[in-house]
Image 1 (spheres, one colour):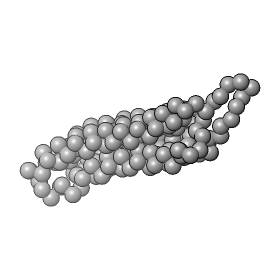
Image 2: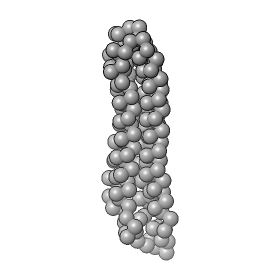
Image 3: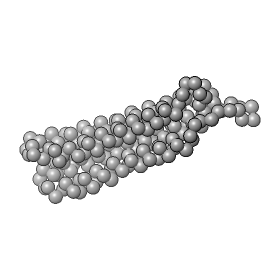
Image 4: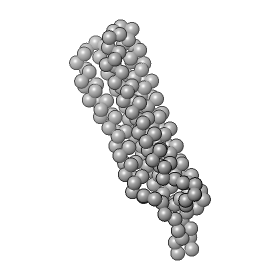
Length: 165
């Protein structure tokens, strides 16, 4: 008989929590810092453009919220008093990695696009609409990761433990 709820199974669930939170936050921090450099660059020449140029920074912050939501949902499915299956641990790890890695890539894309487009906006105001569209497409990468992580999280329901013959 093989037990499939080992005591170390929650490690994988908490690794998913950690991956979702840290990787998406690193992506958001990179996007914020990269776009902030561009905003600081144009703020010295045309301070009236700063408010419109903050869009990439706000969109980067949303990426971190995606990781926070997934982390809270995964941690909410874990209880120290109930058994936790190895399958549930791996699913939660996959959900956390999905949200974290897509958040990292979306934050990277938002940072690069935000910096370049904010600097271009200084010289040509028609760039603004294109900047917003490209930023939306970059943000959607993180949103797709959030959706897949939510699907994975709800697919297992309550992790059930028992003994398999």
